[in-house]
Length: 177
Image 1 (cartoon, rainbow, N blue to C red):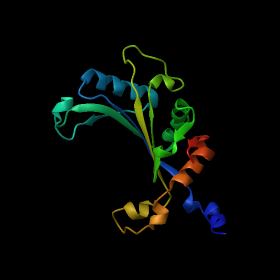
Image 2: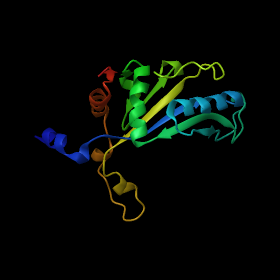
Image 3: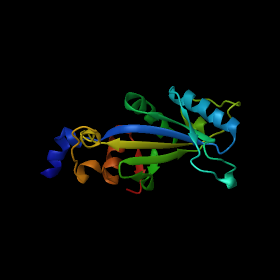
């Protein structure tokens, strides 16, 4: 009975909060610029540089230096790009890629994404894809004025629920479920 109520309750539906695509390049400026150019080609959105938070002599980085590029997509842009990204990994992800409210996976080579051709000036780069999910009503807790409280059971979206959502919405097979 409780599952039937949850199935029809619009406040229990899972939504995509944001999609973040990240390419790390280390301290190589040329590769960082290539990563930014590639992300703009894939998403059509304007990426930004990822900056080092502290000095790391092993990787030859100083605080504030450019070490990669990333882009954040929300709403319709994220929903339209996700099928291409899942197709790049053959619509299969491991169960270990799913945690509460997030799905994280890597794409080894950008040419695996449909519609993207190899560019010799960019070279071969891989990327991390991070998808964050949320339910309606979370803004009640996040807003500054008259903030409310949300139950933990409403905030947390478990592995099984996310696996089911990905299977129904994007035809993704979660291995290990």
